[in-house]
Image (cartoon, rainbow, N blue to C red; front, side, top):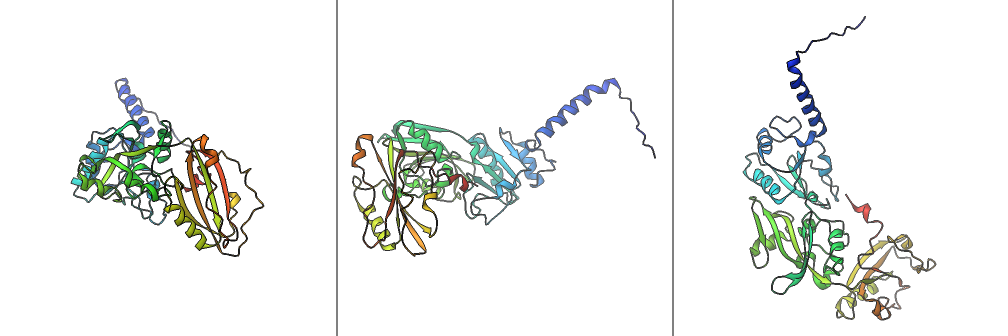
Length: 382
């Protein structure tokens, strides 16, 4: 059997139309996720929501096809896949999306997503819209202070990561007073929870160090709030798990920091000695104590020498020193003390060794204040 190819003569007058159509088709194939119409086949929202979404005059990107990534979080317990992911370029884009959901008769759900470190799917929206906050950028350090007390601050967009906030603040010799242990988290994400780390014993969690918020409420209104202005909303949003408003910007209190920090890890096999040292260090005055104090539990058998730091060597660690104990777990105190070079000889090496603890092993290392960043940290990214 032979195949037969037929040909068709196209009138020359139609060629411009055909060429225009081919160009349009090529463009649509290049950007399939960002063209929205009421009849867009990839839009799994209701026809009415698709139509309203297409009618919005927004400068944003919308993805309908690659939505599986928005159904993942750090907890890996829930996998609610949205129908669309929005990448806003401004607060007005978020306002438009929130208003679309607020006035929708189809119970359209939305969720703001930062770094995806939620545990129970708080940043997921089943068959709804996820707002990818990482597309909103902006960090500005206020050296001259905020308010009557002229408190130094940094203003950061809700999608910025804390690691970038810290680096920008350090350029001015300052840093947030309270941080999380893992810095690859978004500003809006941790402020929607609490933001707890080894600095909280002195300065409280991160939500206790916020001066002002700019948020989008559930009705799609932009509101600037603080403890002096719209205080009920301010305290509801902080630690509110994203249920009261979406954080667009936050002014966070800073303080001046010395250029160096001494980092100490002390390992215990005796729980009582471990907790007693921790309580003693926390109760000391600021001048005699550490700036960061945090305890953790390690499963016995983990090689403590495998805890490496980026840009550091462990030459000052005696690999022959081990903790001689049959205990199933070990206890670790992680401590830091910021200091100036002239104070190097005044910085101690951590909690005193107690007789009832078989051996206290400490790793002491001086480094820039932004360090240490554990080499394992990228493994925690979602």
